Image (cartoon, rainbow, N blue to C red):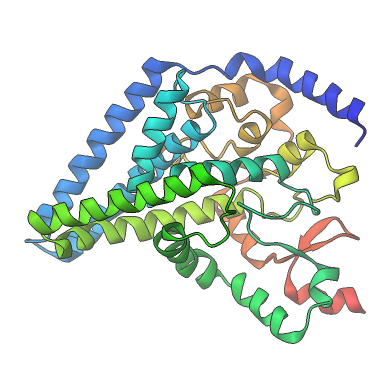
Length: 338
């Protein structure tokens, strides 16, 4: 897309969305305090339930995982500088929540910014994306590379083993971290040190085993749910992928991000991230203004609308077909070859 068209689109969307891209400290603090108290209370109930029944502990892990996802969205907003008006406050809270999420805040913030800047660009697939190959790229691979890609896109690996690897292993020592990213490397070290201190504190108090019995189910459930949310909001049949000369930031935001129409309670637990197209068009809109922005700007309604049931169909989509401009399944390859 020409630079003049990009500039015109930027002016158009900025005029519509800028009124909502304002942080409100009172709303942010209210969210942090209420969600934090609910999470701590739920966590202590789980700790108590260990002496009653571990099945009860696992039941209580469900709302705790939902609250952890909500806290992650607060960190996510902090990373975009949209949660509080103060950048120092955003970074302080983001770093603190990052420890709970096993996520080095500054490392995550930078890779996520790359995702926003290049989402839907076939020539800039790197950090922060679910790996997606085109049909042509996949067919050009040797057999073993195709097998690896098929394994990667398998739901069991993508949503169960994937989050364990991402949050528990990779975030402790991210091998893809460039040497020049000094602040991000320091963030990894600080997060690891904080986690070590938590383990030592648990060893001196409740016991490491009880800490893990409570926190691991929360981390596994929230990690799987979080991975699903990120996946489904970009991996749908009529999503947006273009090569760089034709790529447009605003078209990618509007066409390559879904409106995930969840029940109100799930919208609350997920911090309104289901309004994902709004977020990609204007990442400075905090979670507590996304729903209102969507309601009041009619131009935001003409997007891919996914319900919970409809979103499950995305599990069968694996490759981008450049000819048909849509995601297709591995099974569709036979028809494409014919």
